[in-house]
Length: 391
Ligand code: APR
Ligand code: PHB
Image (cartoon, rainbow, N blue to C red; front, side):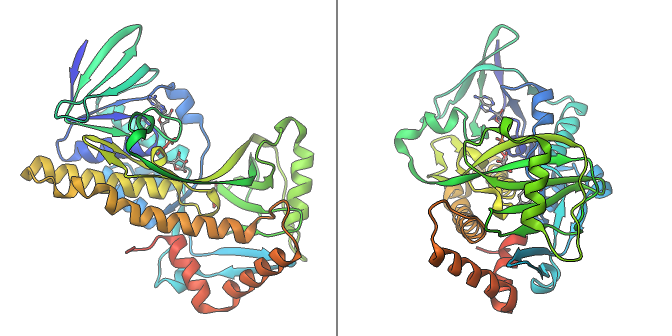
């Protein structure tokens, strides 16, 4: 079948779904193509920290009804090292700005629900997606759905298909890529137990990094540093709790344990592809860049990309002016590189790299002491963490 839309969106992660919602609000119609099932996409557990700018964008996209009911606002985080826990009051340091705890999975569920309620095109389980014609003025996407072949003609293709998608490889000959792999990963669990700390705890420990986060007043999300290719089968729940207890132990405080609902290992990588556009193909979110999760920036960066792309497309359709579209990559990459640096810096400061020596550890501890004693250093962390207004 031959279909037509203004914008073809490849990928129904947060980037693709937010873009589709923003465009629809201004009468620009899109078709979203996702190669996984709805169940899979809605079950995938990802990060859970939203910057205020991301919440504002979701508001504009019209999907914050449940978020306003369920999200939890945090004004600070804790940094733990050397057996001490230090509070970083991000709200005080940034003139009242804070972060919002609401799972990316929930954001995705809300976006899918609104899209389908409004009867707008969002196809799951598509196969053999390929992108064509973006060098000229008549781009199109080929794909299979329900055993039938389709061609989707469009004005622009948005590559929102994540790190393993097909859009970035389609333009790889024009791209420069920059990457760093880290010699560790995170083993994460979702546990049916109330969080033991009201705000997030990032713990540096000689046994390795640990992070205490949450999803709701009754659900904890916890991570420990592990090998990048760690075999999860070697980690029965008791061993995970034991390690979490050891790495976050503090006099006068206890970490409550509960049933583990989900567990998994994620590798850590920094990656940027430049430029984020070629002809009429635009890359957004994880398709163009990856950050290690320590700075909680992945989803927020994706949200920023789609805001810039949506505004540029609105300008183009309303006034025929391509200036903002042409500047898309340049505009996004400034924030991307700021987040790359911040995420790399947080990661390097908090983890125990295999092969690190006493000198490395002394530097890490000195840096941690500096950000927890100097207002200037703490402000730098805080303004990056809550999301810089200007970069
Ligand atoms: N065709 C269609 N869809 C595809 C294809 C393809 N060939 N390849 C991948 N996809 C889909 C994936 O199944 C996924 O649902 O594209 C989507 C990409 O979504 P994400 O990986 O979530 O990436 P993005 O939307 O950029 O979200 C930003 O922030 O917290 C971080 O990494 C985390 O996913 C998060 C990201
Ligand atoms: C999470 O809650 O999943 C989370 C929080 C903070 C991070 C990374 C992940 O830096």
